[in-house]
Length: 265
Image (cartoon, rainbow, N blue to C red):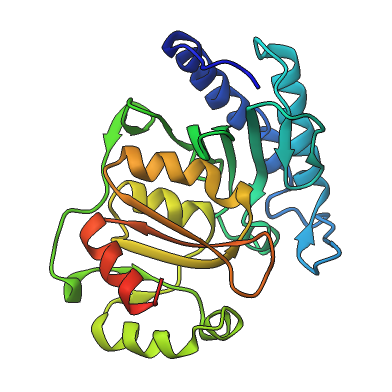
């Protein structure tokens, strides 16, 4: 296993991660709202495009050429590199492919650098190409959007919180349908936002709390460090119905705990 990394090296890797996450932006935007955009289906019936694959190749090539060491990569489109390294990169080249293919601007690129031994990400970046915004964080360094320091929403009455939760069928699939009624009863401002743009909005305090089900590691690795460094709470559990997937609650610590209780986390 690799040794513990120095603060200077982590700072260097953060700058690299920000550049790498931004590197496929022109490629991705060239396919956004393009009449020639071709959409395929993966084995799990989720959509994928040539831009998803091209963006991941771009980031992998960038890291291979620029990273000071060759750590393995876990990516949504091309899987996990072989190796037992303590550290690895985690890539979701286009998180929100459905929105991307429908012309919605809520998609983005996720990149994290994680310590597998400790079970947590050290660096997280969410780049939103359509908004030209980059959210980033490293352990102990706070959370930022560009040069702006960001924080999760402040404590407020739960009835005043903007809560994001999945649609009803996702609650049924997750085996927790009854908990949606409990959440609805106490949350008059309940909405359904999705994908990494919503995660970024939690980190900057626009959304108080967000819950999602059946996420992959690449969906949450960057979010974990970003929300925690923004002063928030990240609650993760193994998904009940899909092996290898996770359920997630993120947001203000106090109100995230309330959502966790209502959803029986």
